[in-house]
Image 1 (spheres, rainbow, N blue to C red):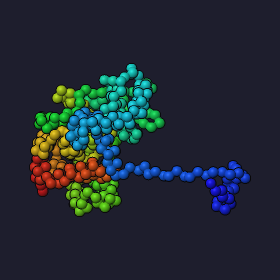
Image 2: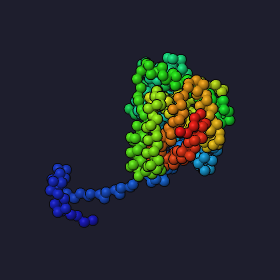
Image 3: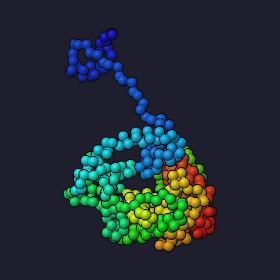
Image 4: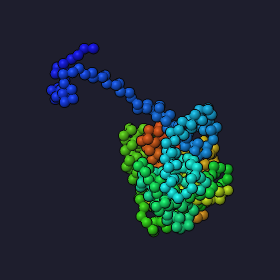
Length: 395
């Protein structure tokens, strides 16, 4: 090893700094460790997202065999992925076991039922939050609806009479567990589709009452289209969505938007958030995303969700249109839709799906972005039939 005079190779200031620690002695300066690039490749990111989706579907009750068919993997690969994902949540499971001591309930078994929710024994559900605004939104709506006698999971207060607990990372909300579960055979019984329409209409009526008791966040699909959604596509050189088609859709929505009723909506209407017990509706859950927006958003969002879940639910194109008809029919038995709302349905559907494309692009979830593009294209190709099915004609 060769020794060099520090005065010959280091700046005077640095030599003086070193002399505060050592003088007149040999020191060894080790070779800097090679920087290893730990950023996942695009392919690795896709695998990470895929495995997260598989675990979430497993928590929702999709069998390993169904998952194997959906993702074209073997049963053993699905089992391995689920085990690996479960290990990743072990630290969180331990946190949950500790935090439930904040409530005056006997020691209960802890079972993860969603990526951010755990069942505590047979009587409670604990949900975790990183965003305090989403937590407070859910608490506010749950409290109002519960006071109105609407079937929601009532909030369980902590030992010190607070609505939630927290630690250095998360906020925790404990609610009573509602009976029942989400329906999975909506395509086999049109009465279920009609009932879904009815219970959503009843929720919208209750939401109108909520608005008289408190203020809620205002949002607008049209403003989102002209704002962050457009920015995402511009940034990505209009990948996936044609710029002229996007602009035409925005123009069309702009012309009809002011005629669409705005009110408090659920904003996350899917089968997992509406519970049924032996065929009878038993309750609503999850108001984290609730906001004031166009009323028709909830109906369109729900029907698009069935398209995104068609592999799990085994829904054909014809069955989807039949569900669409019965769902809207059931809704109108409780709450009349304006002709302008029906006229807007396919275009609001296109806007929502474009929103999902942009969202998944921002999350680097290529598979889900591409799936959202396919749903957008399906709606775009069936505008006239959608209009006819919901009871109006294309202008």
